Image (cartoon, rainbow, N blue to C red; front, side):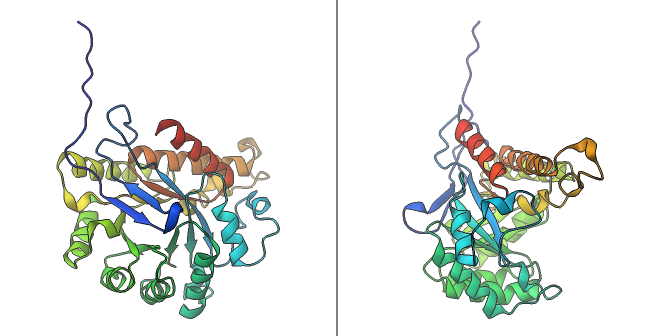
Length: 313
């Protein structure tokens, strides 16, 4: 008897969320099949790739990246170059300089940089904070205000500050928001429920269920992605159907495979190549698990993942 394959599609789907404006606006989500299962049904929105920069410019600790940004002076020029990186869909600005334990830049200075970046690029913008809850709460509010009309993505709202982010970014200024939880499906769902109870519509929220570099506890990320996507599609769980975004660059370029010098471990080969391979491996694993967008740094890694996405979707 000949084998007859039955496509596995679902009556429900992941939500669609659009950020940015104009022809280059990015829409993620919307699929009603498992990740990359284009043989079962159409996946109309490809995985999007965001290029990470910071309020201090590009990450100069990443080998080889300075060559890509050569000649760029000022945040506007760096942001524009990032937006032109082959394979990029949008720009991710991390306001790390706001950290009270670091440079402790003022809210006004960081928000002004975010506006400068938003005005300099013609693609969507996502903005990450400094991971300090108190500072980020004020920071996101001011950034949302100055970037009104840009339809930016605020990354991320957490259990401690989701109310302020939802009220100031989404309700007051019409931006999009990301709900961030710590690699646990129950925490992810709980936060999504709380945000929805505030009246935030599904098309205004994505979720970041956690991240880690491949080989560094990534099995927890993989299982969480599997469980979230599985519950969203097979159980029609509306509180887990938000598109998934995953920061990859910050995790991939701080592990020993990416940071150990060639002098210390000559048998490992080129540090730049190692870092690229770590970033590519992590991003690919996230996409296979169900991420609808990944945040990356190195041009070669971005190009490789873009080619992968184009080949499979």
